[in-house]
Image (cartoon, rainbow, N blue to C red; front, side):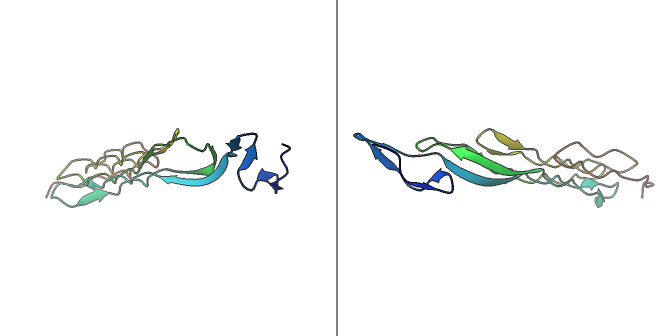
Length: 129
């Protein structure tokens, strides 16, 4: 049987070929956003630096009928306690596509933020209170 059903260069429905159905791949447009990083703590329990935003990826993906794809939604990182850096956010995953969690914010006294999808903020010097 000849393939006759085309719409904009892609199959518009499954086709019966002999005794079996052919199901064409499906193009999926995705947006994968990871969890943001937690803020870093200052010397007295406040926040010294903001956490970085979770990374994001967007494009298209050719999905195959009957195939399972892993989807993981990454959570945000925790804020740091007094004089502790925030934790990095969790990665988000779709199939083989991984978006990295945001970096945790720096602890007080001039520390650097952590690496991530978007790095965490750095802290300035702040005297102990």
